[in-house]
Image (cartoon, rainbow, N blue to C red; front, side, top):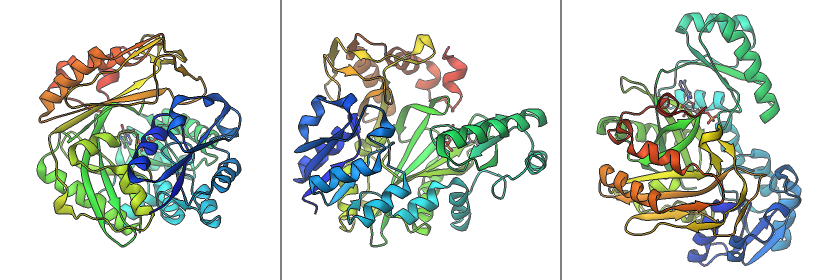
Length: 448
Ligand code: ADP
């Protein structure tokens, strides 16, 4: 096991990783930007280094500064969290050349799965159903139009390097497809420095269901069941739950086994999420792999009792998985609400500023993963998520009641948050009865 690791991230996930390390007896080195200087969660680290100005490209994303902190801090490994450098294969390689373990997959596996087009090819090779789509990258307008006429509109233009819903456009006719191609390419070039796109059939009103995998460096892989993340706005998840109430147990088994096959085919180790969409008829199709820990990992932890962050660290340190598939239980139901510093009444405009007063809910089955506190100033520079409220109960019905109660107790005074929207969703009959798909939020609530 490692003696000391660096956490190349900030906020709630940095704190979450520090907590796991403390329990494992591993020392931690934190990094922070000038925008996060003095943040309370940094006190949980054994040592911390400033890696640059508030702007992420000059600090959390600046590989040379992060590596310098790791060298000076004398760590054996780096945990990247999610976002920032977590899926940057170049950073992963730099860690390797500096003889620092990257707590995640190898650069090779990350490179393969980070390209959605290559990931689709691997999925086909592993006999995992993929969304009908173009054979590869779309080189010309004519090719795109031909594909659209073969599979039928609407189609989705997707960036091979895509993430966070960027570089993705729906098109319903020839004219729209031409402009969607241009827009998606330009957005992907700006966001990822890679303008390559491919096409997929647009699946109407799908559910988003994803499978959590853990794979060690000795060829063992297990799945930890699925999460349903259909409650989204603009392709961004708002609420996640496990298990999904929309799939049959046969589909669950088939999807989980398919996800495991894909990860083994990619010779991948560490934590991964294999994402699928499920159509109204119950057919499931692979969409992409996330080669990192995900924001919504706690719902899986609650229903399986397995600490995913500790598992990641043990796997990276070379330990074999100490349990097999049959040991992975599925206990009750868990739901997570992402609490963002955004104003749902003002088009989800970010609302940085001082949290005058924070009241955190507690009680049976309630978990709040957050780095914020009364008096904390939400900086304007980063992702707006300030915490995750998670509940775990014997049934989905009880989990919904528990979440309604916990949201009612949560008070974040001084800034606008997504709590009122969550309260509306949690009491809406379609959510309560599980009649949701990825368009539910935008169809049902005024979120524009
Ligand atoms: P990103 O990597 O940008 O998050 P994903 O490929 O994971 O993009 O897709 C994000 C979301 O977009 C999915 O959760 C789903 O809601 C929607 N989506 C993706 N592919 C399709 C598709 N072929 N048809 C309909 N919706 C899709």
